[in-house]
Length: 106
Length: 120
Image (cartoon, rainbow over all chains, first blue to last red; front, side, top):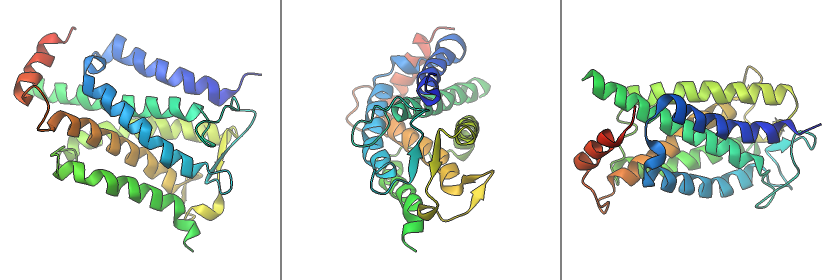
C-alpha cells in the first residue's frame, strides 16, 4: 500500500498550483520575489523542522507506513517540504488575491 | 518544565526572528490585520484539517513531554499556532522582499506593471 503522507505531500502542492493557474490567477508565479521567498522559507524550514524531528528527542514522530522513509536533511521526512511548499504558497496566493479584491473595491 | 515549552519556544523564535522585517524592512503585514486574518484563517483551517485527518490516521503524533499539554480537538495548541506562525513568517518574508530599498523597480511602478500583466 502506498504511503498516505507521501501521496498527500505530492497532491497538496499540485492542488495549490492548480488553484492558482485555474482559479485565482494572481500572477504570483511570475514574481521573482515569490520564488525568493519560497527559497528563504524552505531554507529556514530545515533548522526548525530539523529541531522538531530530532531523532534523539522528536517533538513530532512519523509512521513508517505513512511515509516514504526518505529523511533529508537530518531526520526530516522529505514529505514535510511538500507540506511546507503548499502551506507557504497557499498563504501568499490568498494574500495577493485579497489584495486585488480590495483594490478593485476601492 | 523547560521541556514542555520546547515546541512553543520554537514558534516564539520564528515570530521573534521575523518581527524585524515588519519594522526594519517595512513589510506591513501586522499593520494590515484584516487582510492578514482573511488570509491566515482559511489557510489554517485547510492545514489543521489535514493535520486532524493525518493524526487520526496515525501519519504522525506529538511527544507529550515537549508540549504544554493544552489540546484543541486533540491537537496540541502549539500545532494550531504553527499554522498561524508559518504563514506569518512567509508573508513577512514576501513583503520584505517587495519593500527592500535596493529592489530595482519602485513599488508603484511595479504594482501597475503587475496589474497590466495579469491575465484573466
